[in-house]
Amino acid sequence: STGFLPDCRVLVQRAVEESADWKETYGSKIPPTVLGTRLGSYIHYFTLHGALRPFGAAAVIAGYDEDTKEATLQCIEPNGAPYSYYGVATGKGKQAAKTELEKLNLHKTPVPVEEAVKQVLKILHMLQAEEKDAKPFEVEVSWVCEASGWKHKGVPKDIIQSATEWAKEQLEDDDEDDDDDDDEAMEED
Image (tube, rainbow, N blue to C red; front, side, top):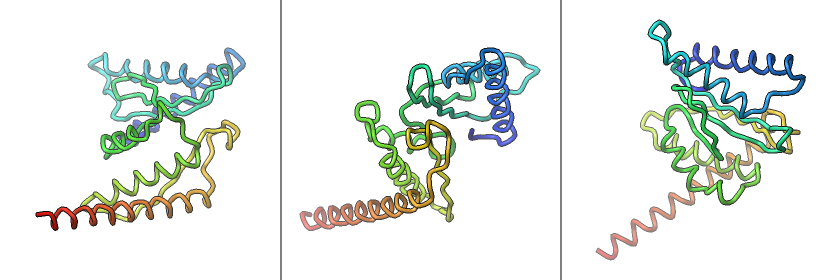
């Protein structure tokens, strides 16, 4: 979740409750799409009544559906609408990050998870470099994939480290290419 931190905590707790209720009732894990729909309904309910304050948070649900054998990624907006994505960003700078994610054409060409980690870190470092008041930041990356047994787990530190180094090198190369293009344009004038 991103947004107002107390609201994020409430949404996480509600997702845990929905999962536990499903397990108790049906004896199996809740499919991620069902969890997204239920959490979206809960969030939307708070937009309908004047006595309730709407949530100031968006939630991202990544999971693996054991019945369909598919991994899913959903974002539930503050209005309660759940949307499925191949790649999504929330919070500050989400529009620029979404634009960069769209350039990867994830809907046409699936990317191996190790490559996806590299690309995501490149996007994060690129957007951070564009900030005026850029501060040092620490990146935590997790995934739901075959390498993690389809469970939510943190990406190993060595993979994050090598992906970060790769991302920074790529950004430096891109900057050098841009500088070369600028020099050529000035020479033509």
